[in-house]
Every structure is written in structure tokens, then in C-alpha cells.
Length: 113
Length: 110
Image (cartoon, rainbow over all chains, first blue to last red; front, side, top):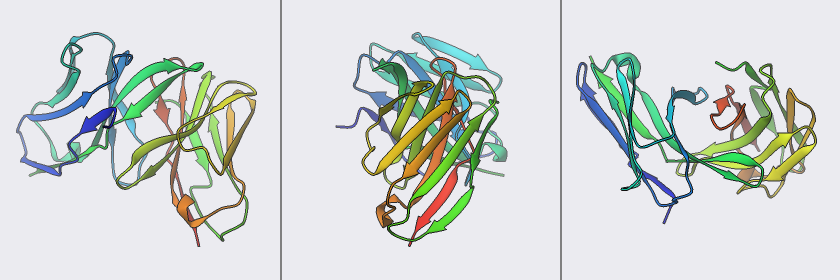
């Protein structure tokens, strides 16, 4: 079993829809939870990160963490064609001198105009 | 965004040759990382550094070595390139837990 599970999609929704992206994890040692956005042939871009259970909002994006269920989500409101990208969840734990990230496989999202 | 650059951005090399990829950051971040990204495997950690001259192995370190002689530079060397090392390589840097990625190097080993 992988430490982090993420549905690779692809996911296709119409412009303006609310998008829900999810990951589950198995390692209770994970402390920080992040979402990255990666456009084709580009490096991952950090969107949001959070430490505790609950919600964190940034503009049209909301990150949600439920540590008791080992489940994290990213919601995108009023989705735009420019949101079309691959979204990667990542979990962090301090191991052997540094914070190490374990990534989900990524969900490919397309927003249709 | 953290100022991270990678060079070269694209490289084609032959099996058996040594290859060095460079990562340069201008944020004075303590931690630096090298990943490879492959279809079906996602991002996998090759090596990381937690300070100048302090490095350690990640999950896919065989065939790779690293060096960090200055805070801003982290080098990845493929000692003798193989076709299985054809991939996109990303460098990242971090002040603590969040990581910021470079633009990537697309390496093809023929």
C-alpha cells in the first residue's frame, strides 16, 4: 500500500464548477500537508500548506485536513480554464535531519470553457 | 516564489557517460532536494541536503551522487548514465518544511 493515495483522474469539469480533489494517507507521522499545482512541462508550484486539522482558505482555494480520517482535500471554487493542471498532494514528516515530502500521483484536471 | 534555477534545462547523453545537473537557489534556504518525475511513479526523492556538505540518500539514490559545497548550489551527478535514468529531474529548496521547486531538467539517455 502506498503511503499517499490520490486518484489520478483525469477529471474534467465545466468552467465555474466547484472542484474537489482528495488524498488519503496511512502514515500518522505526517505533520504538514500541502497542495502543489503543476502545469505541463513546468515545475510544481506550492499552492497551499497547513499543519492542523481544519480548513484553510486562500482566494478561490480551500484546503481541508482531517487527521482522524487521514484524509485531505482541496476545493476550487468558480473554476477557471487557467486552473487546468495536475494537482499534487504532498505530506511532510521530519526524518533523518530534514522534512521529507511524500507525494500523491497527481490528479489531472481540465476546466472546459 | 523562491528563486531556483536548474541547468541545463534539456540534455541528451549516451549510456555510460557521466552527467552533472546543477541547482542554484538565491533564498538562502538550508534544505535542498533532488527528485525525479516519471509517469506512473510521480515525484521520487533521490538525495537531499540539510546543510553545506551534509547530504543523505532518498528512496531512489542508486546510480546518483550529490555534492553541496555552498548554501546556494546543489549538484546531482549520474556517475554512468543508463537508459533507466531518462527522466525529468527537479530540484527543490526549503527554509523548513515547505518546498519550492525549480523548472526541471529533461534528461534523455540514449
